[in-house]
Image (cartoon, rainbow, N blue to C red; front, top):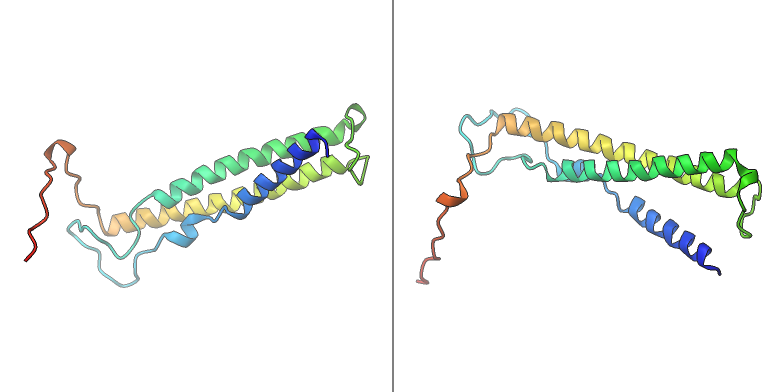
Length: 156
């Protein structure tokens, strides 16, 4: 196996792992506020729903990253397919006419679908967290300069 084939195999394995592990965090981790429960007029330290933006932000980063790879692979595959006479086809290619280009197009379109699902998950997360924060506001933050460390109480 030559160096180019090893590099291509490593790229496909890495992208496959990335696509399979892209979980769309907001669908799994963000909890909506309960139905019928009155909102809290006073900021509370805890809430029955998710008020942190961690999952939607991770989904946004994932959607942008995976989407960029999808656009890249689709563009390279389309360019390769349109100019097949200018490129040397690998010897392992089952379709010497368009096989490598078709593989890149398929990988690119699949990656774009994963990016779209992850982006929709991010939108769901942002909306749910905003709804929770409007019903259950966060308590005000204490400036770092005013925080004090208190030692734990002595054992009984």
